[in-house]
Length: 486
Length: 102
Image (cartoon, rainbow over all chains, first blue to last red; front, side, top):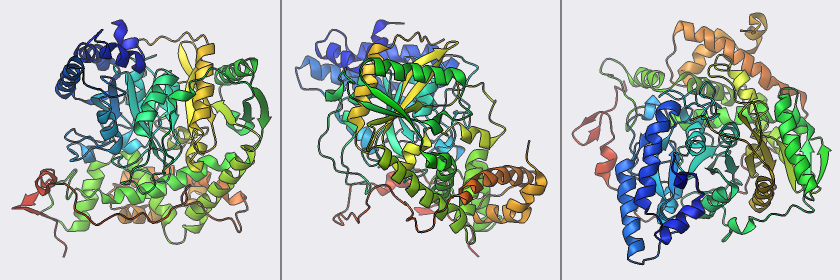
């Protein structure tokens, strides 16, 4: 594999600017790599090679003419297939949207293009982002680059696997309950879920609006910070977008954790946590202590209820969001000359949606229906308040909370597919950040039998700077022996 | 499957599963009804752990940020009706063909 594919985004930008290499050469190498690796891992649903090479040549000629280029000039980006790309099929890995071609770009895509990033393709995911393994894709699973018999995590499995296997330099995913941190952990890369409202959701196909954020994935903390600096910021087209003024996460790539107070919630090392994971995470925490951080175990009683609360809210919002798919104006439609509208919609939705999506729509409908609303939906939203309150209390004494990202190592394909609840349980450490709207990062911290292990840090709202600083310091001070198998 | 069907019946019934499918506008087969009953029972049983917390007087969090009405000028934006119509599955002339209503 050519060395250029292993370089961080900032190095690529530097090299193309001084014309040490051309964007065209580098992008061509990316597609060569995709042709070798993707038949094995299936990270992509759609490739945009012609477009990418055209963009590459255009950026090259601007550089040759001495014109100004953007902060991501030439960098190859893979984009999760639930983020709208103008003129490029956006399927949500669902039969329902198999032929859906958006007529506009999501705000994050506009911003990437404005900084001269090059989109190389759309990545595989669990259908409508509902799942934690990328096995629920209507177009077949993505496989873990570290072990092709194991899942890459989900739902942004394609985005994480493509970066881990050097098919793209960075990628975008979306994180509703851990959908970027989980695959980042399983694929040995860095994934950051921003504070709710920091990145525009305009053009992100909605699953659970109050929980989700578009989130960057990279092989290094610096790459993730670079992408965040490009995509974050106020957008008037998303009414939940927050105006924080200009921020630069790159300026927080500082190797210093002295005085940082880490809290370690006992509840996030629950009984389902595998020993190798626990050991790997503690190893990282101890490393930070050695570098000047302090650490104390804490108990956050309400976290025990986070998973149930999260799933009730996410399913309820999903049942409402996915009501729009009737196959009429776009999407999947069967012959319906012989039946009425109710029958027609019900047949389109039967054929267009996969089993997990149907299960969640029905459960969400149940939680919102008369007689059960108070018991499930309203109660879950109240528990969400209790969780937020407990977190804001604990953040008075601690700068960050540290825990495993995933309680378990990447598991074998099919292992958890038969029991939906068992699959949901894997999200136990990640959902809290979404319920509270706080930022969280997963970074590789250890490995066990060649499989990556991720540590998660959570911070108070808008304190991505702390996450970046601590992750960067850890990254610089850990010797990891991680090598993908593809 | 480790679902106790006796207990399952207390959480949700086959009748309710059928009604949910109807409300959700998703056609499901007899076999699927059974499967969903088992799976949904197990999941709802788990959700019921929230019953043990006292939430009396706690305000619900519908959204984590303070939501205020955001308005903008009612100005037309650039979109072409033609490109929108290109992705419509079934049309009659320039109209979207809908299924029979009555």
